[in-house]
Image 1 (cartoon, helix red, strand yellow):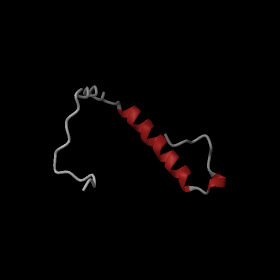
Image 2: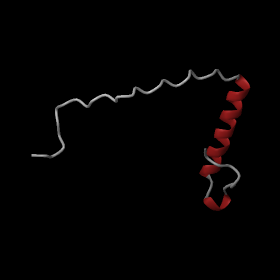
Image 3: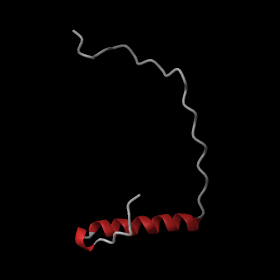
Amino acid sequence: MKCGWSDKPRQTAAHPQKSAPPPRDLTPDEIHKILSQAAAVSLNNMKPKSKQDPTLKDE
């Protein structure tokens, strides 16, 4: 029956994916800024829709 089930392994892609560049290290100030923004968005999302600040967007 052609149910779509197979024991055969999937074939690998003909073109291997390029690896991503290594992430750069963030300064403590950059980390603090990112965490502060995330906390503000999170707190805003906990408010009722009518009281949310539209300038704070979840990215």
